[in-house]
Length: 110
Image (cartoon, rainbow, N blue to C red; front, side, top):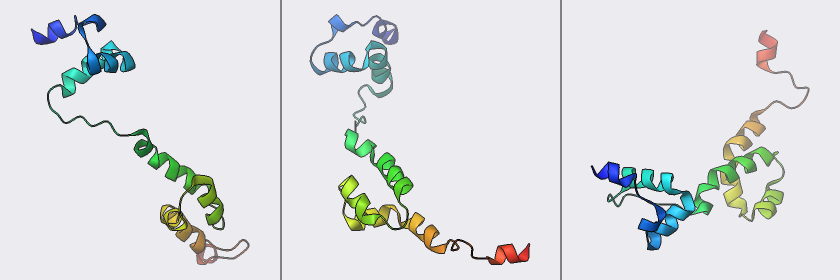
């Protein structure tokens, strides 16, 4: 019964933060949010800065060429140690890669 009535809800029925949220995300999304999270107290909405960290880190890895740590520090406004932490795996791959023109054991075996 409550779910049926919930779908009759419109913007004029809301006030305060509920109305602001519904205006921001739309009524259908607001109702879905209430159905899934209503009354649970489990809903946390992260700040945008926290959500974009994996994207930023991926872009830093894409831009890293093995010799541009300081350029990345300036571009992204991060410390050298933080950039090094982000590119650690790629830096290891670059260090272990054969030098251009160098014959590897794998090539010798084939």
